[in-house]
Length: 278
Image (tube, rainbow, N blue to C red; front, side):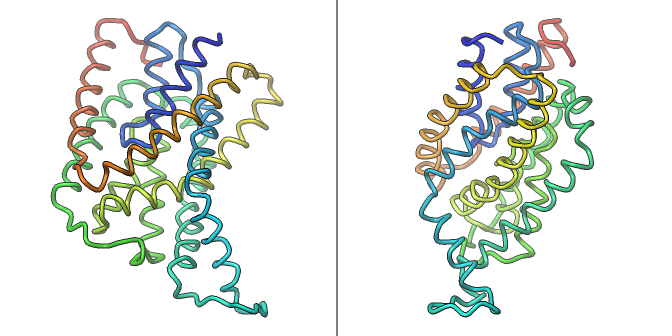
């Protein structure tokens, strides 16, 4: 992999990670479209550490508050300033823990399938279109009344299952979580924010797992992967700021239309022989 390729894929990752359009699908498509081939699930997982570092940077104060309150709510430790388990910060801590379990368990169970057959571009195109429709329906018909203060463990588990769908390239991690959040009646902004927080443990664990795994096998080039990761951080941070500003005002219809058009484009390029199925 060359540096130019790494720069392009880093930009693609940073732009698409937080939008409900599937970063893994775009990495897969761009790599093939420019003749670079599929960069692989390991490369994709590692450069996601860059965008997740952007999330941690942007939400740093929220993360510190949640972790601090969660620990101060542990009943068997004598704290000078204990926090109730009913506190919204404590509940959000539990939501992140419970919501991380589905993607962790399913990711380990189906790792080989995720890294091979599910990267079939016909599957990616179908998933892009199908979940575009689901997102559009959820956005149009959901009540969008609940805020993060209404979050509970049941919702956390359901949001986690939505996030786990992103193991299939084309679903979108944020798209799966946001769609479930909307279906549960959360506002667009609340669904987007919880999708960011919920992704942190899963993406960080997946990225470091792939670093260890690939390091032992020598399957990744260090410099291009590092360049793509750094660029994805910078671009990702800008996208977070922009996305959260517009998400509470505008609908997700533009993203729905984009996903449908991208799915049709992928099928057309496959039919024309300009993209390879695997």
